[in-house]
Image 1 (cartoon, rainbow, N blue to C red):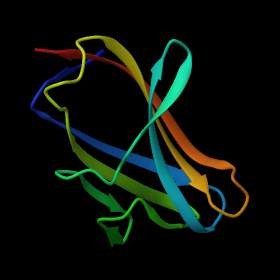
Image 2 (cartoon, rainbow, N blue to C red; image 1 turned 180 degrees about the vertical axis):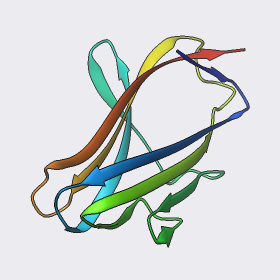
Image 3 (cartoon, rainbow, N blue to C red; image 1 turned 120 degrees about the horizontal axis):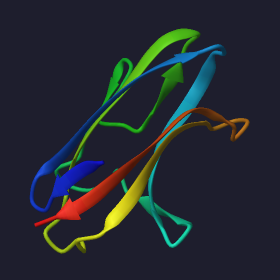
Length: 110
């Protein structure tokens, strides 16, 4: 379980392989609360994103073979101290199919 301290930064790097080329994929991040996926905005201040050759955008092309996505996001002080599974996806914007995904357990702490 990843402990996410209020006021700190979550730094995530995902290396993934794709067996298809995708002209435009978009990263999506969710918290799973009560079985519902709650979207997390990647457009917040203090958020840093890199997707393959693009910086400061959650969208990029995905090529066959090795790809990567990095994210640095602030865990805001008002977030409740709860356990929350985090879901990260890269979604093809044409077909709406998931190209890559990752789920991990986390807990927001003081």
